[in-house]
Structures are given as structure tokens and as C-alpha cells.
Image (tube, rainbow, N blue to C red):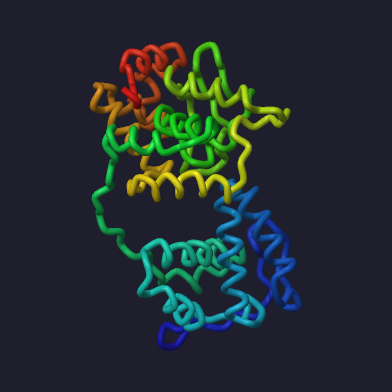
Length: 299
């Protein structure tokens, strides 16, 4: 291609397993559905990641306005220029999707091979103090919101992992959680626990439940966001589930729990030979380590 612009593609190419893409497949319905299946089955990406990639490609195809096979590097350059002055994530998300779509799915790697991801700056991650957690907790006014808060603070789980929990995922006798296995390649789940404070609020909350739904915390996005927003407005403290996950890691380390076990509670079990063969990740061992730490939020 002259001047690094890349040639326009308009030919039948294998798509890496979803069938053959024809020039008559000019827009979204077939190719996006096949792309979604490719990401889910071939790449084994999580449902949330698949949705994000499909959404990004849908936006690009709307911008392109023609068959995805009739594309050049200049088309992609001009599209990515829209995100040039935005955050690193705002630029990286469409580029990730475009690389998977053209390189892996359509089998046209030369169209996207010159594009690089921006470097992420190392930033200080704010960790709330225990006093700030207590103030935020006091601003929560329902049994459900308090139980949710303490679950995030004492388990180290990610936002969606808590919201996906079913009653079958919890061993109430041992206060042990075996979360639904995350199907993504970069995020994993293992075993974690919650403390007596969270247990007390969980039992209070469950007594208010009148439905038979299998999820422990059935809640829609709007109500979930309102819980945190209202408490932030009352306290002026910007606490989120992710901030509680960071606090959990920091506090467990302060209490003397080795990093490899903190990682296990947070679903980041390292895959090194040392971790695989010389670290005991049995539930009994993890519970002993968790209980010995004596993690407390409210006192």
C-alpha cells in the first residue's frame, strides 16, 4: 500500500471460524452476530467484554457507512482521531475491538497492525480510611445497602461478582463464597470469605426478602447506582465497590496477610510455578488465614 494507507479490501476472506464473509454482507446484522459468537466461543471472552466489543464495532460500522471489507488504514485513523484527546480507556476500547474484528475475526491483520495502544500513566489509587468507610456506612439507610457495602469491603470481590452471587454460591456455615466462575481470560475467581459484621447485616437483609429469586442481591443498575450516589452526597466521600476492593487489599496486607493470599481472595491467583506448586490454596487454609487476620470494618 502506498504511503502506509493500506489497501481497500473487497474480497471474500475466511473469518477465523464463523464462516465466510461475502461482499454482499454489507452491514451489521450477520457480521455482528457472527462477531459476537466468535468472541464468545473462539476467544472465550466474558459476556461484558463481548458486549463492549460488539458495541464498539457497531459504532465504527455506523461511522464507516459501507461494508466493513471496504476499509483502509486511513478510515481507521480518522475514526480513532475522534478519541485522541480523551482518556486512555476511551481510545483503547475501540482500538481493542477493531484489532480483534479485523485481525482475528475477518483475517485482515494488515489493516490494524500499525496501530499502537497509548501508554497508561502510573497514577496513585486512592484508598479510603476505615473512618471514611464507617461514615459512609452510617449514611446507608436500608438493610440491603448495608449488607452490600460490607460484602464488598470484606470479600474483595468485583462489582459484578457480588451482584451475580446466588444462594448456591455461599456456604453460610463457613461464611465462604465460591463465586460464579468468570469466563473471561483476564479476570478470575477463586474462594473468598466475609466477616462476622457482613454476616450480621446479611442475615438482617435476608429476613426482609419476600421473593424466591436465586440471587442474593437482586437489584437493577439504577437502584444500585442510587445507593452509592445518595451516600456520597450525604458524606462527601467518593466510595465505590472498586474503592472497597482496594481497601480490602490494603487492609489485609496491613494485617499481615501475604500478597499471594490477598490475590487469591480477590480472584488473582498467580499462575507461576511457585504459586501452583508451593502455595496451599485449599479452602481450609484460606479460611484459617482469613479468620486469623481479624478483618474489621465497623470497629
